[in-house]
Image (tube, rainbow over all chains, first blue to last red; front, side):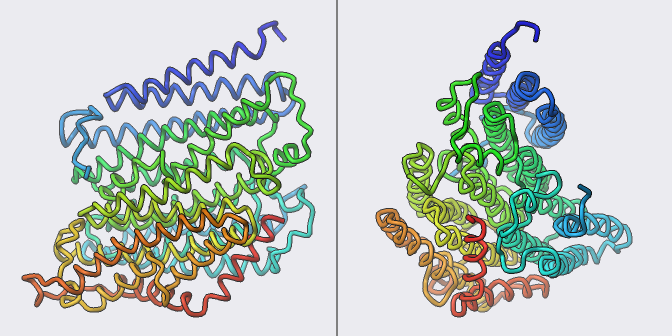
Length: 104
Length: 503
């Protein structure tokens, strides 16, 4: 192996995950929240690929899983953007805080 | 090792549901615009036939006496992705029942008379069914997302309604967030064990041979367990992850709410039961010192109490039922945290009853809204008993069952869960549950006050009940009353499934 320890990849993934987490909690724009969720999923992918390469290089479990995560992330983005568009058509805004019809 | 016939039979519900999707597509093309309610009827017939087929296939290929005598490798099928045990069967019956009843009650809702809606219902059911069978983290994740993605679309299905799209958006944002948390936890589990099969992981955990030189095991393991629990808590709408529930339930078209509150919650519990009681995150039965056991119990208590207390203040009946469904999740977790076959069986029975009960309650609201256009105001239900005595009766049976009043099945379910908790030495948890059941009675019974005591100006206007919905309400109400009096066969069935499941 090329000398870069596994930990480095995990740190990058954890940092990416934390940035995504911050984005979901702090951003107001629904599209930005979607992007932040995608960051979190990409962090998972880095984790999976790194674990596969370092722990089970002979069995492609992590690789297969990462492929599924890509696919699901793409489907999730499609559904999410469709919902954003249908909201935008109704109120010309994608700001999460303005979605306040439903409350008690 | 090539797949044998019984491996295909284990996938029968999913295969049949895919066939149904094609059939619905084809049927929709041929339907006259004024006859589109037939879509719901077709979908319901399909669901009930698949239910019978699944039971038949179980008799043919499964282990009819629920015994898991064969070795682990034989029970894991399709490369270790699935496990077709009695536990899976109980859940599949629930999902198909929920699919059939939901199709019946949505057949006459104008905005949902579209092929896409029924196809999404079927795709979600496929996802649930695979979730209940999943024995591998990859399978579990993909099945969960299959179900979730269809549900996001279904909640936001009526694009002309701002409430529906807003509910869908909120559900989506929370859902995507929770599933990302869960996935990160799962990736850590994979990193610790180099393995994704739930059963193989629990064998490693329970045998205690864990020597991964790369990671400090204990802390990472706990973080992973908490992250996974977060994702699951979202699916079962347990308290810190319940925020989406009232909004999505209120915003969604009512048949979708019925489906979401029953099938989706049951599917969430299916994965919670499997992952936690198999011991993937540490042995549950031996000692209760596991940090996540304490977290689960705390979650259970807060979920019950907060759900019930907030439900009291709701003026919208859909929102009230949403908070009530949060509280009901708490009662079901009581069955889980005992980690005995008795408790798990009681929780399975509870979920089974809950499917019938909630679909009946939402079914009445749908019929009422079809006529009046009001679907969320408690006051507007005034005088329902004079407008339509049978609808009022069905709603009363459902509310009594939710509240746990004797002639209905809800009483048996609550009794079994609390009894299991007492038997497992958790009498204080049962006590909290009983106190909560009393709080819950207050708001369930105050709905009856509107139905039977209050008058309204429109008392002479009857409520039109289409035949499909009448059949659904009849099945659900009779089911509740029958299982409240002769519960033994189903109770025994769930108990056997649970004890075989815990092995």
